Amino acid sequence: MLQLPGGELPFGLDIRQEGSAWSGSLINGPERLKLSEVAVDGSHLQIKMPGYENRLTATARDGQLQGEVVISKPGGKDQHLPLSAQFKQTYRFFPPSPGGVDVSGRWAVTFTADDGQEEAAVGEFSQAQDTVTGTFLTNGGDHRYLAGQVQGDQLYLSTFDGAHAFLYKAKVTVADNGISGDFWSGSALHRRWVAKRDAHAALPDAYSVTAMRAEDPKFEFAFPDLAGNSVTSKDAKFRGKVLVIALGGSWCPNCHDEAAFLVPLYKEYRDKGLEVVSLMFEHFGDFPRAVAATQRFREQYGIDYTTLIAGVSDVDEAAKKLPMLQKFYGFPTTVIVDRTGRVRKIHTGFSGPATGEHYQQFVQEFRDNLNQLLAEKNLISSNR
Image 1 (tube, rainbow, N blue to C red):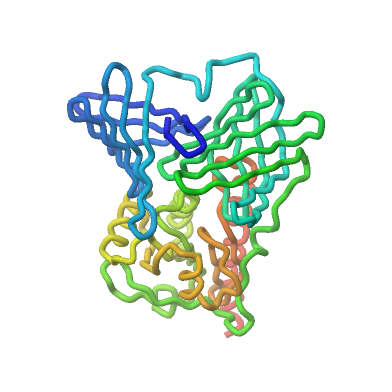
Image 2: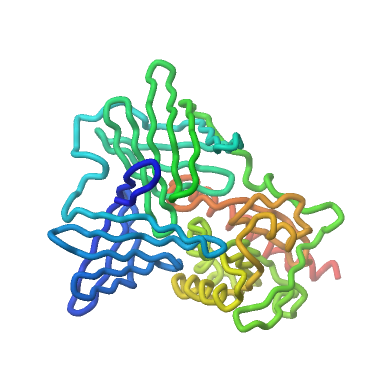
């Protein structure tokens, strides 16, 4: 359990020892997120979250753990979330029961911040007796793997995936097919949310959210690599190539999902004329710290494409660094450039494996677009 302002956030933690080595997993519904940096010293446990600057520390006593999870935030304002754990407790929120209301299916959702700002989303849930799994899809990406339970007319969902610390509590009103409740992220963010059952609920096309300014037809960049050397879009390495530019950061869970997708894609298409560049907007204005965070990210996914330190993880600051974008919605955003340097598509957000068929559809569409752009080589050559 992590202690949030909205109450206890449960997640699964599996710790194992093989010889002198320790490993583990974070468990959220069907997801088993591998933990490779697990250290045990007597009764003290420390886990570095994979690819993040975040960490879990705790002390074991009488079948319990007591400690905290520290989540890195901009400006050094790290969140310290109290942690407690009960050995061999296998249920999520409460002991299994016959269940309650049925929330399976698709829902049109609105999240409302305390300042009144609204965000549209789509909720998709599966249910078996009282156990619920699913996710929310938003323009910025999905909420990843959520797991929870229903009890009577109450719905409880949570996840902790090394970065996201999300807790949802809501009441389901069967009479009007509605849900209303609260959402907490870490120790600072709170939103109200309402939902209506809607089998046709959908978000705007992810390729329509962000666009280039009419006066800036090309996406040009010049940022330092991890060694401090300037790398620009005009460098010979990128000339005549199809270029995928990923705007993200090591702190961003959806960016982790995107990296896991891009790494094998780059290996498959590199020799056909593809280059990938990740512009990293990190929590730290301090260059060495930003480099260290990016290096952890690279090592986690075996990244061998270019990663550049572009700035700090602030949407407004990122927009200033990327003035050619008409509107910068947030991280991740992916820009696809053809062999002539012209921007062909901009994809906002990233919905990963937790979204099931949506992810599979994205992968197929992305590959189709990539194959089309790579095939334009002969056409460009014949027009010169």
